[in-house]
Image (cartoon, rainbow, N blue to C red; front, side, top):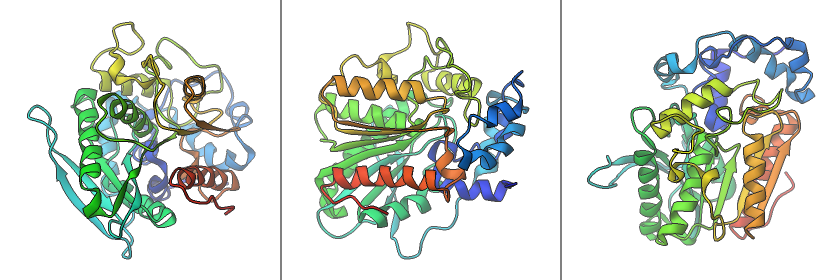
Amino acid sequence: MIELTRRDIGRATLWMGAAAAWHRAAPALARAPSTISDEALLATVNPELREYARPMLAWRKGAPLSQNYRNIRAQSAGAAARPASDVPVSRRRVGVSRSVPDVTVYVINAGGENRPAILHTHGGGFVLGDAQSEIPGKEALAKALDCVIVTVDYALAPEATYRVSVEQNYAALKWLHENARSLGVDRRRIAVMGESAGGGHAALLAIVARDRGEVPVAFQCLVYPMLDDRTASSRMPAWPIGQLAWDAPANRFGWQSFLGEAPGTARVPVAAVPARTARLAGLPPAFIGVGSIDLFVDEDVAYAKRLIDAAVPAELHVVPGAFHGFDGVAAATSVARQFTLAKTNALRRAFGETATAV
């Protein structure tokens, strides 16, 4: 049996985005014990992932995220591995507006000329995570793609709602575009990318950039993105979706914190929720990847279909029996490696480069 220690889980955050914080203190994301047996639930998990899923069963018995998110933040601080010595990283402050605080960004692998770039937003259910913990994993991606990555340390909810974090992320995107020459970036090849809540932020960035018409976005890479506040509030997924890792109570708390009001109602502001955006035409091409038992699978598949219906090129990957953040805790498995390769190749093609087989 595989035992996931806090140290193991901390290392996994380099690859997980949305799970960057909650895997180190996973009991806080627990839900009420199910009447379904643990073995029945594990039987729905991809065989390669079952031993990684088993430790999560105990996590379902703890206190809710709404009571423990501050403790999780404290426990997750400094969890990331050291940045690579051969990839340059710099910390910058970006101005936003008089009403929105400046935001910190980390610039990874800058230099050279006319290279592609990614504006990255981290995961954590809108209430957890930070950009600094993303640096080692994004260094590896920057090296693989020979690109520049700017990852944004946007303000977390509930201390700040979407009105703050969306503007901070957009300011970072605009800063990247305006400073492209000094960073060695080709303005025509700027993508947005994020995992989980960061995927939701990336989708919002693509929408805001289209509507404001100031920064052309070439591609959106959405990794199990958090797109719809109605999931687990006004729409409950079928079992076994959302039974492992990020679950329904955590999702409701994350959205309520981000919105500043109850999710799932007709009053929810469209500007905060990608899935509520009426018009998707004119958005950049997209990659969307998600597991079939991830809480977000239904909303992600629906969003991909809406993009396709709007004549937006969209590549959708649904991994059978994969739970939220599986590619982080089980990065060495073939199913996770295939998922990561599909994501990386989608970015390569978006940047006008040749996809690879390994």
